[in-house]
Amino acid sequence: MLKKFGQLLAQKRREAHLSIPELSVMSGVNEDRLEAWEQGEGESPNFDMCYKIGTAISSRSGQGFVLQDLWQALRADKIMGERISELYFVN
Image 1 (cartoon, rainbow, N blue to C red):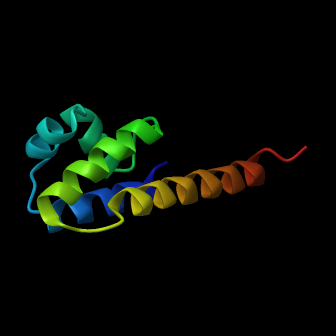
Image 2: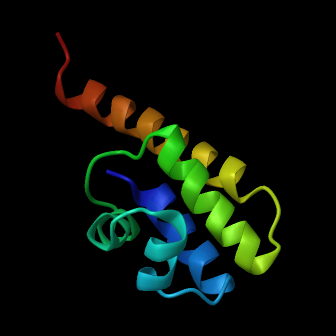
Image 3: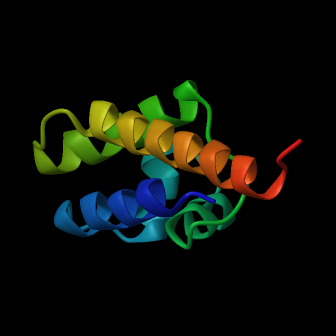
């Protein structure tokens, strides 16, 4: 689940006054993928995708550290996912 990443992505995109289609064109990342991530779904993006998205948002808005914020949120989601799975799969 990509809850923190998706929420942050949606927030940063809106702050940059970008629609999902606009962000898709600017970043080269598929619209369906962006929508899924904002809803906390889909496979985790890799660093290159985060870089493309962060660069696109930063270029439009002037916001700094977007890439770092997105990557940190993705890592937090991954850590929380591992903790949750530990609760369900105890040996």
